[in-house]
Amino acid sequence: MIYSMTGYGKSVLQLPTKKITIELKSLNSKNLDLNARMPSIYREKELAIRKLLADKLVRGKVDFSIYVEATAEDTSTQINTPVVKQYMDQLKGVADGDAIELLKMAVRFPDALNTVREEIDEDEWKAIQTEINSTVKALSTYRLDEGKVLEADFKKRILAIGGILEKVILMDPERVEGVRERLTKGITELKEKYDENRFEQELVYYIEKFDITEEKVRLKNHLDYFTEAINSKDSNGKKLGFISQEIGREINTIGSKSNYAPMQQLVVQMKDELEKIKEQLLNVL
Image 1 (cartoon, helix red, strand yellow):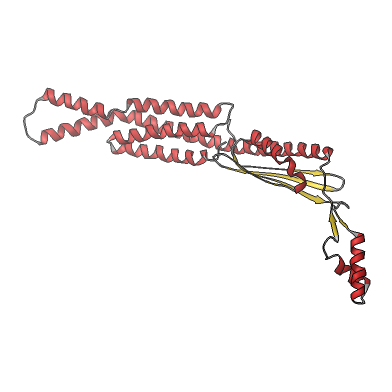
Image 2 (image 1 turned 90 degrees about the horizontal axis):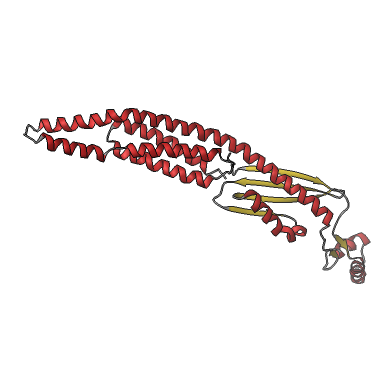
C-alpha cells in the first residue's frame, strides 16, 4: 500500500462570532517543506501545529492555512474616545467646521484607535485542533486514493518488464548460437588454418564473457522485491526508488552484454517502462 505526496484537505469550523477555515495542500518533495499561514493570534501555537503535521505527513511540500472570517460584531479595534474628542476640540480652535468633518479628520490622527491584543480562548483552540486533525485525515485519504492509482500503474509496468524479460530468456539461446555462428563464419572466411581446440576454448571464453544468466536472475528478483515492497503496509517511496535503480542497473548490463540487435530492442522496451515508473515514484510518499 502506497501513498501519494499529492493531496488536499479542508475543514470549516463555525463559531458564534467567526468562521474558521483550515486548508492543507501537499505536493511532492524530497523532504518535508512546510509553509504555514495563520492570523497572528494563533502564532503561539505554530510550533505545535508544525510538529503535528511533520508527524502525520512525513514528506512533501505542504501549505497549511487558517483563514478567519468574522460573522458577528467581534472586533479587537476600538475608538479611543477621549483622544478623539481632544483632537476635535483642538481642530475647532483652529477653524470652524461641521462635527462630522472634524470627526473624520480626528480619527486619522495617531492613537485615535486602540487595538486590543486578543488572547486565545482555550475552548476555541481545542475545537480548532479537532478540525486540524480532520483536515489532516482528509488529506491522508486523498493521498491514499492517489496512491492506489499509482500502485495500479506500477504493477502494470512491473508485469510488462517481467513479460519482456521472459522474451529475453527465451531469446538467449538463439543469441548465443548467433554469436557462435558469426565467429565461426569469420574464421572460415579468413581461409587460414587454425587449431580447432584452441578456437573452441576462445569461443567458450568469449561467450562466457557475454553471459547474462546472473543478470536475468537478479532482475527477476528485483522485480519481485519491488512488488513485495508495494504490497507492504508501510509506504516508502525512497525504498522503491532504490529498488528501481537496481532494476535499471541489471537492464543496462543485459543491454551492454547482449551484442544482439533483437535483444537490445527488448532492452529498450524495458528501459521505457522503467523510466515511466521512476517518473511516478517522485510522487510516492
